[in-house]
Amino acid sequence: MQNYDVVVIGAGNGGLTAAATCAKQGLKTLLLERHNIPGGCATSFCRGRFEFEVALHQLSGMGQASFPGPLRSTLNSIGVVDEIEWVEMKNLYRVVVPGRMDITLPATRAGFTAALIERFPAEREGIEQFVDLVYKFFNEVIAAVYMRDPDASPQKYPLYYKYALVDAQSILDTYLKDPLLKLAVAVYWSYAGAPPRIFSFTDFAAMLFAYIEFKPYHMKHGSQALSNAIVDAFIKSGGEVRFSCGAKKIIVKDGRVAGVVLETGEEVTTGYVISNASPISTCGEMLDPEFQNPEAFAQMGAHTVGPSAYTIYMGLDCPHQELGIVEETNFICTHTDMNRAYNEMKMLENEPAQMLLTCYNASDPAASPPGTSQAVLVDLKYGEPWLSVPPHKYYDYKYRYAEKMLAVAEGVVPGLRAHIEEAEVSTPLTHMRYLGTPAGSIYGFDQFIRDSRVFGNFDPGLPGLYFAGAWVGGGGFQPTLMSGASAGRAVAKQIRKERG
Ligand SMILES: Cc1cc2nc3c(=O)[nH]c(=O)nc-3n(C[C@H](O)[C@H](O)[C@H](O)COP(=O)(O)OP(=O)(O)OC[C@H]3O[C@@H](n4cnc5c(N)ncnc54)[C@H](O)[C@@H]3O)c2cc1C
Image (cartoon, rainbow, N blue to C red; front, side, top):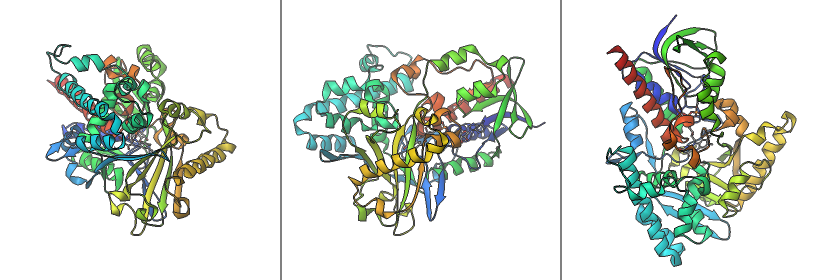
């Protein structure tokens, strides 16, 4: 029987950085992935002459070499930054509410503020105060939380203590009036799947601050290139990876992790498992009932499963400029009510309310073959309603909603449909199938204020079992990549301690 220091289950972002970090620290590490390629969400697939990016629209936290963001340091620590051709975006996004607003916000504090003031001149003062608060508040968060200031106190960090658990909507309402302005400022809520009313100002400010200060990024050849580069770095450090090879069971002996049973039936021994699968399936399916910790289930029961996505991947037979698509990141909203848009995420048959149209060619002309372009239309959707669709009706629902999304998109990009050469549609059930996540969740648990990690981190209550990825560190590329590295460091530290 093979023995490993660590077995990592799942090669999504969190599993990849966890495995690479462990191997880099000299630990004998096995990475198991059920799919035949690495990446989880961070993958691509081919249709015709197009290679489609599955997930990444905007990467946060990278920053430039001269002004590195936290993610750059994480990726540097496993030696992959120089293996990727990074594509920096100049603008955060364009938001269009047809007939009412069409605004593009640059990825600089001054440009962001000026563009908002130009469109909403009567709200100059509120806009300036709002942006100022985001910056001052988040700088306090960095000092008090990220730098772990031992002397943190309400006197030293008054904004942090006052606003950390306040909802983002209250702050928007304090400083801004026009619902269009509030939408323009807060449209990134969909990147977390939580509207400002139930999203903490801390998480909201973190997102806005990170994208403005460290710029949104993409990469040539898509996120699959990053996933592949991390696997290469892992193997170079002595790691072993097995694709098309899921983990079936975690073996427990003497009250701690003792090994893993693979889906092939083979057993390996290890004292440490880092799971990139959801805690729901890890604790509920991979642990025999006698080892399931009621405390862990109580913790999971306090959360709800987050949203999945409905996506149309389109290979277009013309350059994007011909269709008038200028920006890479375009939010198309049919109304300004973010709470209503959130409630519509729970429906099967609503009219699309807030969609993201990404055209990678706008910042990377080589994102598709010459003379073509690649565009992706995403609408966040909870998986739950899709679970009750009978199999014989699945395609009706799937393509009916695609038609609705295309109709709304054509209001902003006339003629889009006529230029589709290749198309593929994914629903929450697609993500459920490929990722194995409950209800196809792409962000793990919901990320509401009540889910904030200031209330504590998930503890499976089983020595040797650790987690990495969206379910424990929050959804999105930056949080998942960073959570994996942090789980890897924690395991390495523990092993060093045990070995003296
Ligand atoms: C359409 C879409 C758009 C998105 N846009 C963005 C964006 O623009 N910016 C951003 O930051 N984030 C975005 N995200 C979210 C981001 O991609 C995810 O939150 C993140 O990639 C999840 O990473 P993870 O580490 O949790 O692992 P996952 O991606 O969930 O992968 C988990 C892996 O574990 C494997 N696995 C599960 N069970 C087992 C088992 N028993 N044995 C072996 N392997 C197993 C799965 O096969 C999978 O490969 C998007 C996601 C989607 C789908």
